[in-house]
Image (cartoon, rainbow, N blue to C red):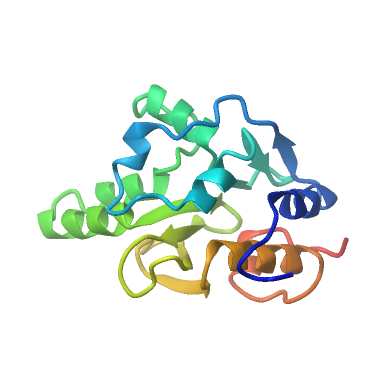
Length: 187
């Protein structure tokens, strides 16, 4: 499949084959408060992906995709979120930098240029995000605790990331960081 275009239904089918629970979207509109927090407009493909389902969670409830429905719920709860909000790792970094204004500014700058796609608590807190700015604009990066803002590029684009995810889930290219962040097994 062309890495520049992968159909949502192909990815959803692969996730379902591996036991991921996927719920249909209920409020798949982009919250303005979410869109305006970033340094650049969110790509249409990203908004379409995040709006494709209300929730998308792995069988062990330890990895999940960030969705528009989930974001809207997180924003409505105004910081009183059970579990992990879409910006949980940003909040953790801000808390860790509480006594350092420069470090807080660096954390904020990083997260205004990276949209979380998938969060995971397998072994450690980790995530995949879409870069919106700089040299890696459009690429998907991987980060983990304790320094969430130190990342590595895992795919040149969202479609390439989704294709690689399908390949990894289906028993192919089982390489880090996917094998750290997701339950990878044979179909």
